[in-house]
Length: 229
Length: 299
Image 1 (cartoon, rainbow over the protein chains, first blue to last red):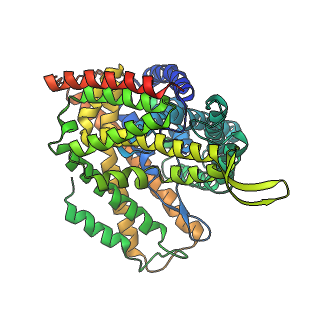
Image 2 (image 1 turned 90 degrees about the horizontal axis):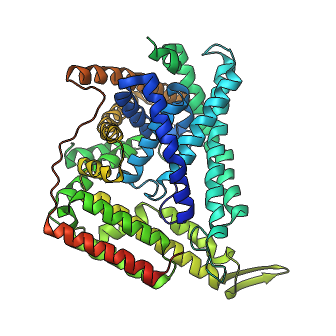
Image 3 (image 1 turned 30 degrees about the horizontal axis):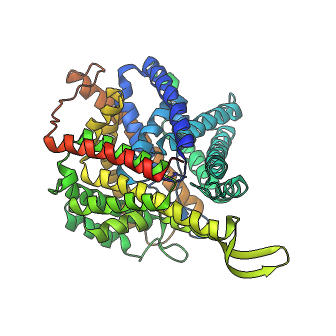
């Protein structure tokens, strides 16, 4: 889902950078208040952890493998604001160091994967879990649903950003300047692969990891209470 | 940092398909090990290029970052193909001036990173409406033809992506990570953010080494594949374990930082020094930026 350089026009990537800037500012203030000086190593390790989730190959039916993005999991274990900062750092490192995602597209990629994904995942998880116990069936279902839905929502935004390009910028004869596929193509293509394949991996990984943490170290699932110790 | 022979050894280990084989190919354990091996290999290789005595390696990282940001913006704004092609050729010139072999550079840009942009551009040949150039068949209301605007938009997309990716690859390959981080301050990023980026990079290697050990251990204990559910549960348990470990490590690192006098503020030693070459390059890149937009047009 990492958008490379050259697919988005300056109006789009500029606007998304401008959108993310106040969010980063706000997030760092919120995190500072709740985590104080601990934030530095916690966010750094959170970001490193978010990075390596993608290195785990997950077996899927039929013998192929895929990997999870981990945005939902990070949101559940770190809380949405810290998750947003950690995932942003991860995406910056990926773009700067490993060429995953373009440098001009950092604003867009962080918007999709570090803002839309953790915030939607966190709200879905909290909403569906209700007052259920951390390791209960309902909580695990909530985690899986949060993974599935948040990944798809984030894919939808990616599809819309790409699909808007032919509308926003084209030559006088109608030749598109950036991503050439309109919304009718970009959105269904992005949606299909995530609805059918990647969404399920995200759901399985999120639910199973939450189940593991609930069994072995439930304190890790309560990002807010843990900090008050 | 791991020596090269160890990396190749690891790759040999990982490539062994004798156990945990999936249907039709490698199992998930092998794939993860292979991914990790190529990650380390890549990291070592980049480090070697960044230390080589080339043109871009000698520039002040702040100047380099600023000029490359200009080039990237220019590449994203230009709307004429020929000037964009010129900007692309300029990246090849820079690569050879920086001791990056052309074959490696081209492979990296065209094959390694945006493989998917080549594939993505392909259907555009047919799908972008316009005057048909080569018609394959026409059936009822449906015509399969390569259109003129399809061809030009596919060419344009690949050219733009190649140019942007080339600049990004050049920047990353010729700058050592700590220097690149320090240089990020020209964008007025908060110091603490730069500190977090640096720490993330450091702990990344530690976590990846841990994952490698987990998978090697699993591989050495495996004679037959488990069921899908059990394997998925194993992967999830390792992710969960790794999270617990990073969480504890974050606390320990925090204690260690406090005991060494960390007070929440990040301070960096500034060792950058601009040379005459940097000033010259800065002027040249601004000139090139203006020229590129003047000739290339603004989208």
